[in-house]
Length: 318
Image (cartoon, rainbow, N blue to C red):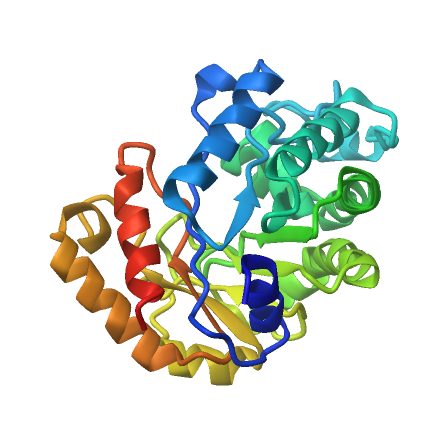
């Protein structure tokens, strides 16, 4: 199998010749303003690590640029939020940069682009305290705002897949921590816009992955995402405490993960032999059907990329 065949088989739950590996970092801030340097950083990382496919970063385009959004705003102001539109630089810039990366990869591998769910896009503008204050003040206003952002995200997804040539999206859903919302609140206030974007992405691509993000290091209430469907789920093994076999049974699809992404974990501190042994153990748990080897979330930039390559090379011997 070549890389695209291997990853496609894994997404479809078919047996692979060896378990595919994909881990990712964010792109350093100094490259964000220069597309050529940004593209080179992403492609060089792919060549250096030799991962089986790429999760493309959205760095430089996080949040949702609107003059309405600020930390001091009132909930009623959310009703003034309007779609950016498919031609807005925030959307076009992501599509055009992704197209450059895809062309540079020249068909060598599957490429998924990071897309945050609507509430996270708003939070990236106003911050967590304001997000929680606004949604508590007027849940319907926040639902309206998330719906507006969802329409723009659909335009982004459409352009990424149909124009830029990305194979699908890496859809990051957040805000599911057990101490943030009750299950009923999340399902009523957040899930509708989450699912609107996810369902649209699934309608135009069969190569999407959902990332149940646990970057706050607080366990998620996984039940709120029970009907979020995609061919692959990326979950947090070390925060949501679910081993690979349990994750495969729970999510009912191919799962992606295994390594702790946090600084001072094995991936950062272990010897090559220790990392190779952990790779063997994870693959023994996951098997060659329905499993992709990765990490809980993004890796810190100080991690030498050769350590990712150690995992890749070890996986290819099994």
